[in-house]
Amino acid sequence: MAEAALRWIKPELPPDRVHLGPFPRCIPAGRRFDLIYLSAVDYCLDTPDFIGLLSGVASCLTPGGKCLLLSASFDQPLPPWQRTVRAAKQVAAVLLGAVKLYDRGQFWGWLRTREDYRQAFSQAGYVGIKDGLTGGERGPETYWIEGRVARGGRA
Image (cartoon, rainbow, N blue to C red; front, side, top):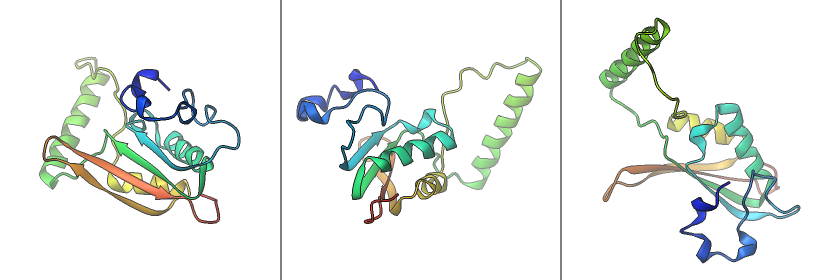
């Protein structure tokens, strides 16, 4: 969608492999890929739109092709006491916001759990779904998930 997002990878790719614009309209007609990589695009999509994006990706993959997503909005599992504290804070924020005693600020996007991601990939028709965490030694862990289009070519 934005030229700036390609700054680090564009010099490594042939120009005919770089497609800018709304997906999947930016993909040339009939073009299919073995892998489509998505990085931190899911936070701004509600669940139906996220599943729609994943379905659109599937339509641009070859049979057996993969979609790999890195998420910056993974909702890490929390111990029960931390979940309770977070839920209480959220309820308090909603109630105080309703009576204009608290400004919740700008909505920055959706957090999703591992199960949320796996369900979205499954609902978009992907098979062979794998996921995990990467990094952590030099920074925060990053959640990744990949799904494969069935060999028959349908996701």
